[in-house]
Image (cartoon, rainbow, N blue to C red; front, side, top):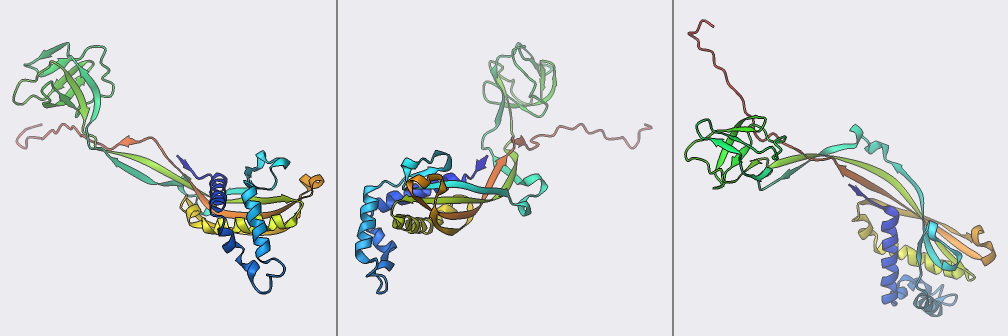
Length: 293
């Protein structure tokens, strides 16, 4: 079974993005290059970018899952599951999505090597010890003798196995039973979910810190968007709401800006494999056209 954990994938991407920026601090010059434009350089400019660099160098900005967020973690990012709903348009035939065929190069061993209790050369029958379980053995399987010669099993009664003998006498020193099953099939199912994650950008004191963290977050989500979508996420988009006083932390003057990240994720699973028919044994009765019967 394969389940895409959207919140965990975003968590990993944010952690990697922050680590990338901290080890390549000059990336912040590109992220906030707009501060150097003619209409903003007097208000923000190079001095503000240097403040941002100092902040990022001095703070290993944590990424927290919602149930693990505490006031002492701020400034930080937090991840919250907004909603996760199955895509009804993709739900069909009980989510049946086809069959997976696996090909095996080697025959399948039905019974490991054992020494027959007896062998009747005239009848081509051998008796397997009671310790050998022949439940899965059937006509059409192959008996392999000590010389690795192969003989077709044509009948089984209790522990008595009848084989088709042609040519040399089988070497019954040790034998085993195998099947020439080379393919198995597995039914596969898929379900799609429309998921939304809220990323909280939290800071206290200076509101500008929320702005810095927000635009760093936007850059990470855009820079690593191809990587996110390679992880079984068909499409990711985001929207944001402005910063506000977070009532959960009013006493500490905490401000928060929210980003909602949306994606379609996939869950897939496979049932237990079952073999294709490998051998068919049939008795053919032909009527004699000259017979009275």
